[in-house]
Length: 282
Image 1 (cartoon, rainbow, N blue to C red):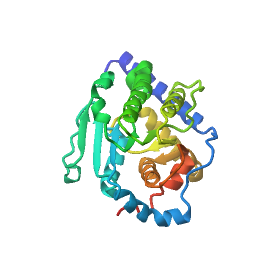
Image 2: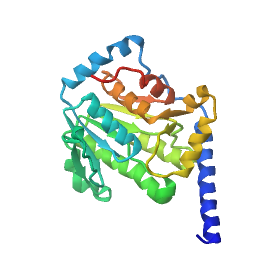
Image 3: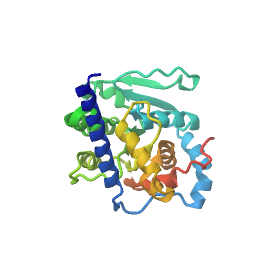
Image 4: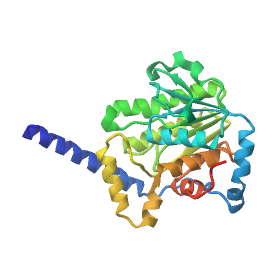
């Protein structure tokens, strides 16, 4: 690599790191999300029964974004817990799922630019999980907005029309449609616009920094993980969370009966609801 090219790459990496740290500092700001959704002791003890009751309902589920870190772990956990009678992945490409555990997973390949042509992919699902997302660095500002707002919103509209009763949205700590920070602004905007669709039940998950061994190289996120790794554990757990904890919180929440039309789960609620030592398997 030539010296100018090397300097350019270093500058880009530094810029990504600075942007990531700015995002991390924004995530350290407190947010008011109303009452939490942690499990009481009685609910924790009742989880096995709640899961069994849920399985008996033979519900179907779709996952958007199963190729990403959270979506991939979510799919694995759903299959291990055996909560749904039918599991469908909706994405822009077919995933290679060779293991025996995935043999009954349905895959619907769609063009997100022409989603109306694929409305049938969203038909007949009781529950939906949306883990779609990209980054500004990877897709550019316009591409980020198109994926994280437009694709998510259109998918939610089709899911609602297709009969989905419970829509689960993976958002972000600090999401705020009035934010000056594009990432948090878009997350807040899509939260609000999906709420307008009036699902029977709408659950929003606002995790802090997601801790995972991402397959895709993202230097900025690596820097942020290092940053949180240097903080005292009590601070780190307040503003970051392992992906597996997010996924288990999602599934523990979905099996709990609720009359709430909207649930907003912040990082603390996600930690409380998805504790890794909970007995999650059947």
